[in-house]
Image 1 (cartoon, one colour):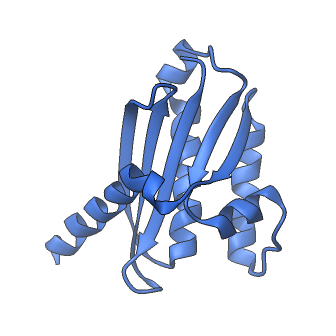
Image 2: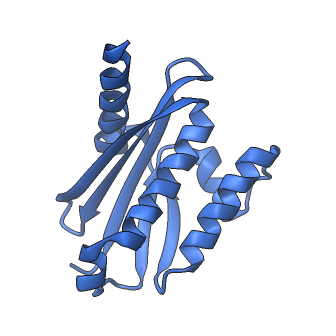
Image 3: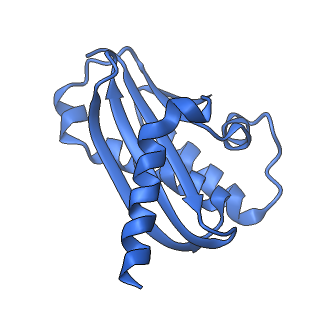
Length: 146
């Protein structure tokens, strides 16, 4: 494998409301390598979107697969269906709130720790179904408990 694609999504039911994240890792040939979902408590859609990216990079940094297969083409492609978040991470859109600014700083700091280039790319919602499904599964599981 020479490229890694990470699709992330976050969402809340209500804004703010119960929130969850989904992360799906894909190989170059489009096969899902790993999926992760997590209920993150009460939050906004934006908070969930940023938490999903942060968690994806944390998973990648601790991954034994990554350590054992460090044969990537110098780039990991993070794919999100939030144009706002992508443009804020790229520095093209201004971050207007302190708590979102803290997310941006954490994500950039974590991304800078990799020897690979981490890029943030916008994809249409239709191309992010795996991560979206994980978000909804996490929310459904948590809300069934109540």
